[in-house]
Image (cartoon, rainbow over all chains, first blue to last red; front, side):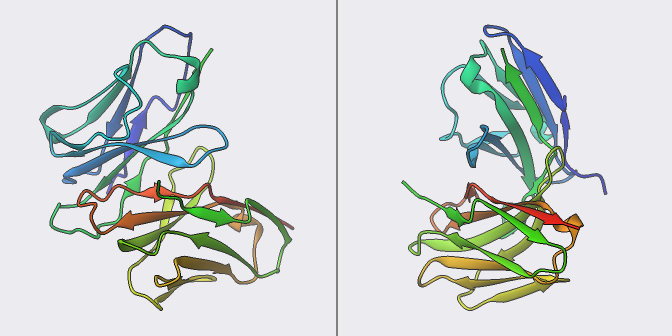
Length: 116
Length: 114
């Protein structure tokens, strides 16, 4: 079974540019999460999809961040325009059916974003 | 503000040493406590999901205990090996949080010298 994949693995962009990160969850997983780890700090929740719907977006920093999940499959996270403080590692995780409340979250390897 | 604290922040041990580290979390509204092992540039790997007070889980040389009343969990590694070098993360899951959002500690970075 393929795990959670993320693309790209690294991205270096200039302040003011736009970047789109992609996450492909484990096939059949309804729940998809985005998290971010800024250097030296803890991994922080950004948002949660159940299928194509946003269940919880309380962790999104501001309106420069836009997440979508087309057809309940893969998800994209767009940062526009990027600022220096957006640098960090962006993780995606997925878990099984909503009814399985205690499902483990399976993480991707992350996208390392550097804004210069 | 919900805080999950891990200590120590980093740990350097010799191969063969046994070690342990702590995760402290809010004791109220507890649902589950997750432990992950993370090597940079790789996916964080789930080690344990713990729910019951007094629970103890084991996976090879790694084990974990849980005290939900006082809000802490210990992770133990017996006979550390260089391949155990990684950052160990704990994450707290709240009972009222139907979505499963995890609140992470900063991690304990373990380095095992041969």
